[in-house]
Length: 245
Image (tube, rainbow, N blue to C red):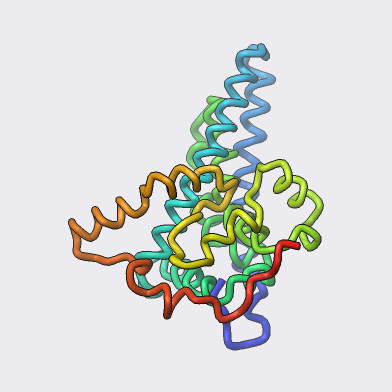
């Protein structure tokens, strides 16, 4: 969330909370419908539950990858005037200068945009799909994607300041830790973009996939990513990141 000029900049509005509640409800409907269908209309065999577990795992892994692609895109392209995503672009750019400020924001205030997108994209599946495996995948993927910014915020907190569940999930390697995210806020500010588990960061960074995408976009359009020219002025932190201890 971008910093505001008044003392309440970190608080969510009622509109933010409404979208957040709607997004959460949409994801819960997908998950509930998946389980109800599996129990009531499908043979409850080990195979069907295994398929659901694999679909959920795939949704979790895909959400981490998508969070990295989204994070890379808004960090490097567009402006505050970009339709739909302008506020997110502005917020992510501000986040580089004030990395720990995200930890002060109410959850609804940083999640509402993705919650609105989740509501719009998941509702058709809830209404028209009767496939429990597909709905299970949609629920996990959408839920992890929607909360990826909150997971990002938790990755800016030392363990002693985390909620117990978040600390446990980070310790288990299910969610990204502060030490894993730190490289994103150090020169040259072009790595560790994924913000769910961070499991894809090693592959994306070592294989330089984002660097390749940037080169291709520049070749095709002439548009330079911000990471090529702006890190010193735009991304150098003006406030200190918290220590993991």
